[in-house]
Structures are given as structure tokens and as C-alpha cells.
Amino acid sequence: MTPTAGHADPGFSLPSGGLIVSSSTYVGTAATVTIGQTLPGGGLAIADGTYPNVFKNNTVDGSFGVTSPIILRQYRLSPDSRSAHLIGSLNVTERTGIVTSFSSKSELALNLSTKRSALTFMGYNAPLNTLDVSNSNTPSHVDPTNPVALTYQRAIVQIRSDRAPPLVTSVNTYSGNNGRAAILNDSYGSDVYYTVGNAGNGSGTQPTIIVNNTGVQIAKPKTPDTIVVGALQGTPGAATGYQYGYSVTQNGYAADKSGKDDNFRGETIFHNTLYVSKGSGSNGVDTVYQVGASGTLPPELTAAAAQFAILPGFPTGLAKAISTDPTSAKFATTNFHPFGIWFANATTLYVADEGDGVNTPANAGQNPNAGLQKWILSGGTWRLAYTLQNGLALGEQYSVANLDSSLDPATDGLRNITGRSNGDGTVTIFGVTSTVSASGDQGADPNRLVSITDNLAATNLPANEKFNILDTADYQQVLRGVAFSPCEDEDESRCLNHR
View 1 (spheres, one colour):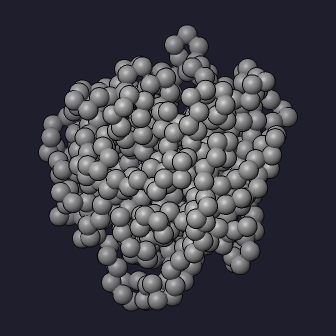
View 2 (cartoon, rainbow, N blue to C red; view 1 turned 90 degrees about the vertical axis):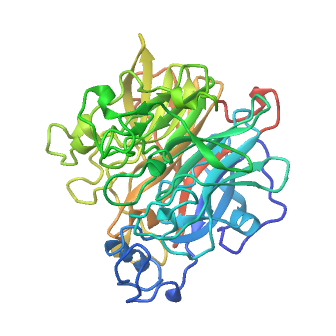
């Protein structure tokens, strides 16, 4: 069964133990874009709306994207998690009107709430087949230098396991860019969301209303304005060094572009502590961060005091200093691109690395950090034990029906992940892959859902561990986030997603 944009199963439910994957299908037609038309982000269209050529328009419009439906796929896993059967799908857009942006690859991360009772993700409150929404402004945060002079709210969608209608909270955050993830804190009776994303698409110095609209935010149901999380760094209004949360000056570097050090995309809550990742962009440090004090989620009233810190032992080099040349001595030591993060326990952290996205014969499949990294905490410092790659076929092209073979994608690493403890000393991690291709926009490539089982106690790379390919997206489709379905049972042992 292949989920399509027009399929909405009214009997869809989220029984405990199911694996949920967010996806999207491009539903534009040739008429969606007309060659020669002026694009919202600037430039004249060089391709019509036909997939995949439509995304060649990003060469003339750096903000180019087309809104598309959000579809949740539900899988039943085999006992050994080496295969998965697609058993249902839900077209979220049909039920909520919320869309995603094709082909923004950092969107639609799935996260369970702190009580595991709800699944959350972010999108846009916009019509289907609308151009450049992911770089539009948001209400109350309009950047006059943003070339996309459109205004659309971002949205948080919450889906529970009891078949209740999805709950949508439209928010005025991440103006000029996209919201990537949201986690509902429902443990203490006062529901709030912790979100991550990026803001800003203008030129010159970023306005204060954009800088305070990025990074980690706190959102409340039915409340459009959010609260920025993170201590003020630098001087408001300055062209460099002005951030809320992390600044490269904390690690002794010269200040860089304001509002861009906190370009976060992955997040998780473990032991009541918020962790986020950064792995793209030319500013800041691509690594994993702790937000606030251990054991305490940033509260609304003191969110502005939260300190951000790179986890001890994780990379601290500047993103702009990353080498993508496999012959360089710096290639293995600098080429980190963290995305999804999952704690197996307090001393074992798995980090998805999507690779550097460089599609050259010399680079493809050569990055030793791409794939699934296992980090172990010892003596207060994290160290990289090994990176799991076997079975991912990094850099090897695979075919997709109806796609021109010249555009066949190859896996470059992993994006979003989730995991579970198996009770026998092993853990199984599920992830969606990143790709490289000649398509011109690798976020539009049909990618894969994979799994791997790892010996939790292992400190050296096991020879017999291998990724299994569970599913591959079809033509015009992409896979984005992955999580287990919500679980209402108070006994955590009855839920498959052990956090």
C-alpha cells in the first residue's frame, strides 16, 4: 500500500507499538509554476510545476518551495524489526489544513510528548501548492528585507492515541524560515511545547523581531506568540554576536552573524532535560547542546535565563571550517552534521549524521561520521565510540520507479531517528535517510526508512551489525520524521518507545 495525497483513512488510530513516519507527496502540476513567471523569492521561473524539474527553480529563487500535504504512515514491525508492513495512513492536511514545504528536508520531525501520550510536529497554515511559504514572514515578525513578501503562520499539530481530532496551534514564530520540531511537555498539567527552528531570510542586519524568533521557543496551545528560550548573547540590534541561547563567543570565537548560531533542527527531552542539535548552515557550531540545567526544563517565566552549552566532548569547531574534501586531514575531524538524537540511557546517546550533502564521486560515501553515531559518557565527557554505516550503502545510487536514472539518489546519512530498548541488552534505532543526487534539490529525493539493532554495551564497532531497509519512498514522495505511536499506559514497560 502506497499512501497518496488523496487518501485519508477515517479509521486511522495510533495503537501502542506502531511505528509512525511523516511523509509528503508532491501534488503540483505543470500549471503550478509557469516558465517565465516572477517567483515570490525573486527571479523568473526556468521550469514549470512538473516534478522533479520544478525544483530547478531554486537556482533562480533561493527560497523556492511548494507546499504539499502531510501524510502520516503507520507501520507494523516484524519481531526482529528487520522488516515493516505499511498498514495505514492519515492525510493530516485534509483534516487540519496544515501543510509542509516540499522539499524542505529539515521539516516534519516527529516527537512524543513527555508522557508519551501525544505525537507532535510542525507545519504551515497555508494552502496547498503555494510557493515559497517556508521562507515567508510570520505575523508580528515581518522583516522588510525578506524577498518573500508573504505572511503565513507556522503551526504545531498534536495527535493523540484516542482518535480525538488533531489539535492545531498556529504560531507566529520562525519568521523567514521553518519550524523543525515540537515536543509537548504534558507531565505537570500545564501543557507547553518546546520547539526548534530557524528564522531570518532577509539581507543585512537581522532585526530584533527576527533574532528573538529563532532557536528554541516555548509555545502554548491556542496562543500564537511564543517565548524565546535562551540567555541574551551580544548586543540587540548588532550585526554580529546578537543571539538568544548559544553564541560562538562562548567557545572563544569571534562573533558571527546575529540570529544564526541557534539554527537548531533536532531535539529531545531526556530525564526532564532538553537537548537540541545543529548541523547545517555556515554559522555557529554543528553539534549537540544542552538547554538549561540538568533535570529542569526551561520554565516560561525564566526562559530568558536559560544557558546553552555544547555537551562535553562533542565537536566545538566552527561550521564554516568544515572540510568536505576527503583528501584533507580535517575531513574526518570536522565533517559533522548532527540531526536527530536519541538517548538509550543516561550514558549512551545515538546521533544521526546526515552527511555533508556533497554529490561528487570523490566525496560520496566517504564521510566516516555520516550515519548513526554512538556516543558514550565517561568521567563527565562524551566520546564517539563508533559510527554505524554498514547496510546504508552510502554513496551508492538506487533506482526509483518513474524517476529518470540520471537523477537516482544515493544515501548520504541519516536525518531523524527514534529508538527502543529490547530488554536483552540491545537497542533498535529507526531512521530516515538523507540523500545526494543530481536532481538540483536533494530534499526532493525519494529517501528511505531504515533500522539497525546495536549491542548497547559495545564500545567498539561490532562487525555483524547492519542496517535494514524497511521502506523506500515512491516517485514524488519523501519521508521525514519517525517515532513510535503515543501510549496512554502509565506502565512504561508496556510501551515500545522507552525514553
